Length: 312
Image (tube, rainbow, N blue to C red):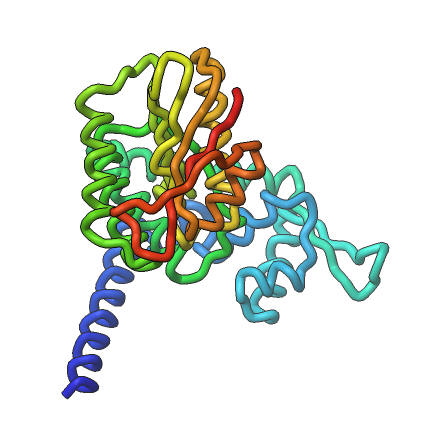
């Protein structure tokens, strides 16, 4: 019975995946014979894009990266050569390697394709609300993450938090730390209280929250709140497990420290837990020093809360 249920669920997911592919390719015009009303197919347009974003490209590397048949790629490059879009030459370092570059005409073709793509997608996004655009971009980024695109090829940005982000911070704390640390309702209630207090009574001049995004998908957050006139408190730092190793946590902590210094705070305090080793390495690296530790009812036995201070 369990195997049958699993198979039914899998069949439904495969059908959903295929339905999305059919919708997406039609919505963005990928079924048309020519890409963006140009003389090129979708694959040819992608080849031009890759060549435009590299000073020079080894043909074998381009084939591997795009997972193209060697014969097909060779025919496309031959045609591009006859059209004056590319030049090809043997590498001076290894005569077995062939290098390809776009010509001035090829770069002009790329600029035309790039401009049309931007215009079409901008028009598509303009028809949606800001929240719909955010959901769309996050969903696309999540697909890239789940299907295994290397994260180091993606753009990390830190932005000010919006009102809706605070609910997301609470939700992700509940999921992340329940899954990884086994922290339960007491911890979720603690985080909810911190966020509620911040929203009810925060000073926008001396307190702030930041969200880190990876190509538009939210990947982490941190709060800087007023403890006293001279002391700022760093709170609720977290990074999604799938986005770790890219310096996101360090970037958020640095942003928090810069803000506190700019606002005239003299010291910064934070509380962490002895089981959060990755976070502790970030704090140690910027100079936080532990001054106290004690058990906390929100955390399980065998761990302790740790108080750390930093002179600003």
